[in-house]
Structure formats: C-alpha cells, structure tokens
Image 1 (spheres, rainbow, N blue to C red):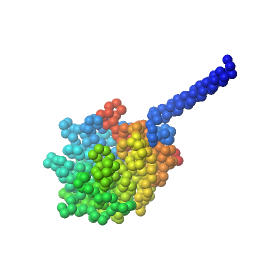
Image 2 (cartoon, one colour):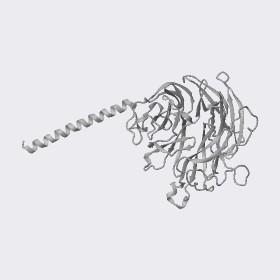
Image 3 (cartoon, one colour):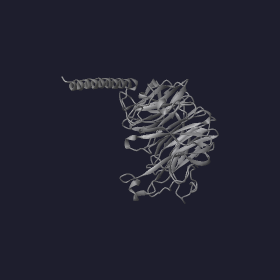
Image 4 (cartoon, rainbow, N blue to C red):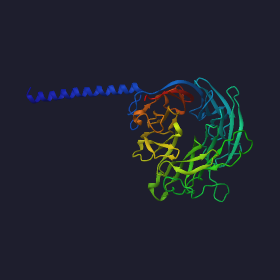
Length: 481
C-alpha cells in the first residue's frame, strides 16, 4: 500500500472515532432530558433554559365529576375557604344542568357540592368568593323567558352555608343589560368590603342611562381610533358596584359606576384589592381603521384585523373611579389574556399574554410583565419572549411563594417562581423556569402558602379517563435563594 492510501485510511479512522464520540454525547443528553422531565426538545420557548427538575409534587386529588370532554361538566374559578377550597362548576344532574360550588377538602381527598341553581343556556360556572369569613358565589341567572344574547340578565349573589349545611341562600340580585360576554369578577378587601365588576353593552346615545364621556380617553398615548359600530357588536363598558354587607331584596342601593373610557370595546374585567380601594383592569379592542379597503388590514379572508391591549384604573371603596384610565400595553398589540398576583407592601405584578411581533406563525406568543405601584403601572417588559402556547397565564400564590404558570406551543406547562419582591425573579426567567409535567393539560386555579411551599389547586382530565374531571393539590417547592 502506498503512502497516499495509508493517509486516507488514517483520516477515515479519525472521522469514525469523532462520529462515535458525537453519537454518545447526544445519547447522553437525550437520556438526561428524559430523566429530568420526560419531554424531548420542543422548539422555541419550550424550556431549553429551564432549571433542572420539576418543583411540584402531587399532594392529593379528588374526582369532580364526568362529562368534561363532552361539555357536560364545566369548571370555573376557585377560592380558598376556611375548610379547604371552593370551585365553581356546572354539572349535569339527570337531564338538567345545575350551577354548583364544589367544596374540596384541604388535603384534596373529599368533595361535596352545593347547588346554586339551574344553568340555562351558555351561562358560566358560579364565581366563589370569601367576604368577612363567609363563603359566597356570584353567577348570572336567567329565567326561561330570558333567552338569547340580547335578553337582559341578572347577576345573583348567594351565601353558601358551611360543609354541614350544604345550602345556598339568596343574598343580592343586580339587574343588567344584555351582552354576549359573561365575564365577571369579585374582589374583597382585608377590611371585609367587596366589589363586583362586569362588562355589558353600552347604553346607546340618546337612549338614556349613563355612558362614558367622549373625551374620557386613557392615559399612556394618543386615544385609540373610534370604534365603528357598524363593523362590530355594540361597544362594551366595564361597570362596578359594591357588594352589600347584608342581604337585600330587590336592587342593591346605588347604581353601578362605569370605570372604562370611551373609544374602544372593552371586555374581560378583573379586580384586585389595593390600599384604600381596588385596581380594575380589562382588555380593550379596536379594529384596524383601514378596514376592508386595505388587504393588509385583514387577519384572514373576510376577517378584519384588530388590536387588543390592557387598560386599568383605580377604584375607591364605593366603586367609583379615581383618576384616569391607564393604558398598560401597546394599543397596537394583540393581548389575549392577563393575570396578576399581589406582593409585599401593596405591590402588584401583572402578566399579559400578547401575540404581537411574532415573526412566524410557529413562534407562539409572549408574556409581558408589568410592575404596578401605587402611582400606576410601569413600562412592560418581556418575561417570556416567545414560545407561549394557547391558554391564559396563571399567576398565583402570595408574598414569598408566588408562581407564574404557562403552557408552551407543545402544550407543556412551565412554572416560574417569583421572589417575594414584586417583579424580581429569583433568577432570569429562563433560569428560574421549570418544566412541571404534573400540570400538563390542567388549569392552575389557586395558590396558597404553606411554609416555604405553595399549594396549587389545579383541575384537568383524569389520566385514566379524559372525560372525568379531577382536582389536584400540588405542593410546589420554593426555589432556593
């Protein structure tokens, strides 16, 4: 064999050795990833920078009922009660759908149901809340004659008896106008007061009743373009009313106050207590003013392009707005959902899922974080830059044990542990984030503190049967600081 042949064979041997090393390294990394969370690589934002190992373990679970995959069982929001948790649900009882409050024990091993009333049409589950130590539930009710989205409705509040009583007693009723949205929220203060917020169609000009002033535009930039009511449904407004301290017959004293500004359609209000009152936030929308004349203004065939952003305002104990409406995110964005969690000293973190500035369809959305202080919201910053999947982010817990959960584009759940100082993560989001496989396919509803841990109540389909809804209690360990 000549010298050239020897050189070629040597080169081939070197390349073969290098290939073996690379294959072994790749196999080792894949094995490590499988042991850590059981998930392979998932593309952008899927957790390649996540901290090693999940931090949430199962602490208990209980069955809520059947019919989850067929729409026969709906699960709403939850609140911590004196003897565990209260969850709003709609369940089928025979041939009838009933609104109920599921009372889950603190260890997640027992559940009892309190019947609130019939669930007619597309009404959502009741919203439980605690005021002055007592458990209540707020829900929309309609009579058999009140059919269709254009029919008026009533917001009913009932008081839920203790676990031994198992009954719901009427407390207050609030008549409302029609609206296709069924969103509502209740916020309670440490002093025992509470407000209820909802969205409904604005009173048409000249038809009587309160309506926002035309000059009442949100701060934070120029007013958004006017809403073309010929191209959208009737514009919505956000209304607030204090919850009475005692049961009332008929309408509660006082009229609801409109806290939103004009110029945009608004929906999905949320409320949370602050010193001296409450914060109220909502999603505002407008259509691209170019309309059908410009193809670039279309989201898809025959679908007008729209923009959505978050606004918020201060509200006093009486439900009246204090100061101006603040625009929290860009009015050229695509905000789809938001959640918030309180921290120490009256500080607040608000998290917004936004689909703006995504260069490709598979990029998913992003999560913006806005630190809210007494003087108002600060400038938004990207908490998760890309790869956020469908579904609402869930911010829960309390000072010293706050978490943000979200699903990526592969529908795997990530958790970010937040420091007790509002807006300051223990580490950058990519380092403080963990994959939490026990939360895949589930909705985190509530977080309560237990020493250095956070107990998370989440609801989702049972592993053995996706038609069965199961409530899980997970113990999520605080990240070492």
